Length: 234
Ligand SMILES: [Zn+2]
Image (cartoon, rainbow, N blue to C red):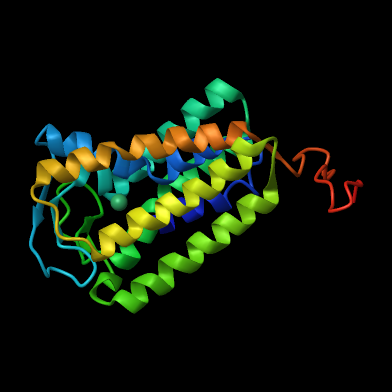
């Protein structure tokens, strides 16, 4: 699962207009952003087995800290609390916590049974959509498309950076996804970890785009400030 997680992040802007897209991405991808560091530290392990599934050659041998359900509840609570303390925005904090949890739920649809319920658990969850490319695409692509659509409705560009920065971000995410699906397997677990670390740049890109757009719908007043094609208030 890659663009599906970003899709959910885009979707969430409508529910929490005050939260930057960068924070929404950070929450939706939180456990995949932790994972590369845990790999590099040797705390978690992944293997590359070409043909392991139709979609990915990765076998997730051991990732209890980033991807066990119990740990994900902990990360969700932590992200929500930190945001609440920093921004005093309860809705935003709840949405961010739910986004962290959503990652595990979406992973459970596509992964082979490899997601533990808690560290040390022998019960492993995963519905295995990755064994079919059409099913994987049918899950992820609509999620991403709906997310981008909702985000572009929930916000309006302030300037050219806000307009084209978003277009470039969407195109870039699609290109990375296509590269993941159709490119050759990564050379090593270490390479996976470093590519994984580069995802932080997508979070930064999210903050940058969001800074160049304003929320169309003011959450509290319910007043729509987006102007229509004639430039008149709707
Ligand atoms: Zn994941």
